Amino acid sequence: MFTVDVELGERSYPIFIGQGLLGKPDLVAPFIGKGKVVIVSNDVVAPLYLEQTRQLFPELDVAEIILPDGEANKNLDAISHIYDTLLAGKYDRNTLLVALGGGVVGDITGFAAATYLRGINFIQIPTTVLAQVDSSVGGKTGVNHPLGKNMIGAFYQPRCVLADTDVLTTLPLREVKAGLAEVIKYGLVYDAPFFDWLAENSKGIGESDSALLSQTIKTCCEIKAAIVAKDEKESGVRALLNLGHTFGHAIETASGYGNWLHGETVAMGMTMAADLSRRLGWIEPNVALRIRSVLEENFGMPVLPPADISVEQYLDLMLSDKKAESGKIRFVLLRAIGQGVVEGDIAPALLEETLTSGDNLCR
Image (cartoon, rainbow, N blue to C red; front, side, top):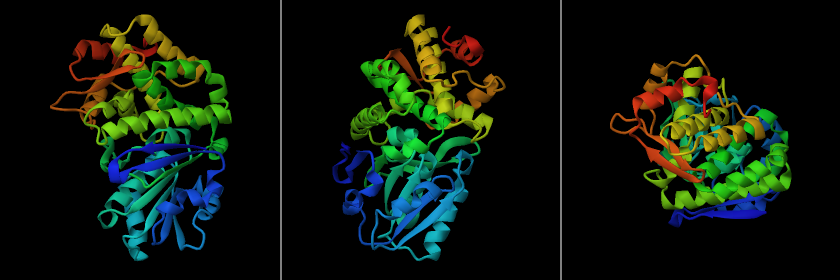
């Protein structure tokens, strides 16, 4: 087992990474408190891991809230459902919420914890690659709105994160690949040797080799923990972790939540970011092409955005993005592999070329 600490003063917390962690109640015991426990999960994950998760809280009053699966259900209705259940059950400020699921469940549960009775404790038990390497760490919580992804939320840290790699064995291959897009992001913006290591080990990682996955998750969590410790609320360096997300969120919103997995649109967005970086002259054409190749050929990810999204749709949605400032779209782009930058002054003609490139992205 690996332990990675997120250093945030009195709000610091550990991330536990390894096999069989759902069978180790001693790991979460220090973070439970003295109240009731409510596990929030969805109708796909709960049949697989709800009973195991209950065993983490022996001799405690444990209830559950089961939400419908999918990004389309990451909305204020889900939050209201959690509020209704907690209020009807007279759950107080000593209650502990447990997020058992992927990024959607984690974001919803964290936002409910941040806002119920002005804040109660929660822990994260992420069950997807994407959630274990990214969304469960760092305290971003929230829900989607029809006009924009993750536009309603709060920064609110969990008490701990329990990343049991055994649960990844039940993931569909598409979910594994989508999660690995967030993994590759860390290498592209922050750690070039890690990007090279991922490319070299892509076959084993894609086949869910336990040792390689554990090392991958550990490295990602170490990078994110270091960044979050410097910039908890994304006013500086943490914004680099949004590589591909400005494009990707626009694709998700325009296509309808749930038609593409989040990681799939991030892969498309990173390809578009590499293409735009090339057009700006910041990276060489062969570097941009290598990024596309690693995403597409090594990891089997979709890299081409849907052809039916217009330039006008992109611009409208990206101007509504959380990262936009003073009427300018802010992109995370690349000066080199391992060197991300945030830029808001992009020539409209270059941006339009990227948005209309089709299969010629990075070529």
